[in-house]
Image 1 (cartoon, helix red, strand yellow):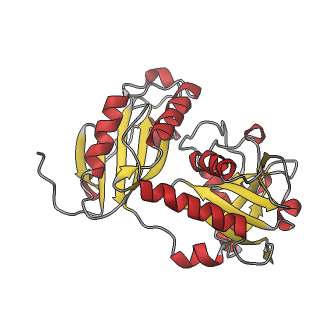
Image 2 (image 1 turned 135 degrees about the vertical axis):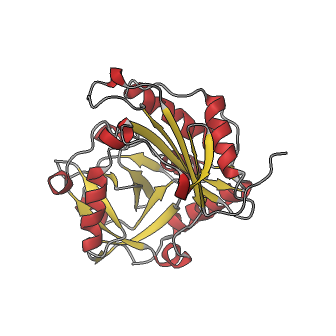
Length: 297
């Protein structure tokens, strides 16, 4: 059995080697560093196994196809992730899987890149404070004119500057997360999350056709809602529609479901997590209790 290394808060697998985060290095000529020419997935472990791992790998492969990028084979991806997770004997961990197009001369042409670079980052899982799940969080809407437009939203690439700037603007308004709108005013997604509202007992979320990332937890929540008899709709709605919602929450792979109780400095619904949100929070907690899986099929 491989001997476990001394406890370190964060480990990184890079170029076939497992290193403490403080020792890991990416070459300056790596295209992920120079151009954001890379793709990634983020998940967390549950019972020390990655949550919805097969779905995350499938989306990584979709991103690679969209960006004409070559991936290491699945066995190599799984091996690297296992090596990182194995270092966290006492805690759950955050897991980020990154593939860059590789290194090469200073040239935008992707054909000059050498071989894809695999990086897996793991660190001890730190979730939002429990109080946020109990009282909810505040969001602020941000338009494309405020922060720019993210290209190829169906590909989870490292070109996240619009989301970075959107969150910066939201935090200046004391909001927990930015809620992005398209040029016509329709809500699309959060800076690092998907968004749901409840109106008249119907769970609603923006459709993928509006140009948002197909969130793994978004899909899980839609399935859970159907299993619990909650009507669902993928539909276009505006910030004004969301402000009149009965309930709202955001979803992400690490945070799960986070209730939203304020939007644009105004209370949303009764100003506390509603019954459908609470029901889905309980269903998601049951998923975590069942644990993740190393299965990739």
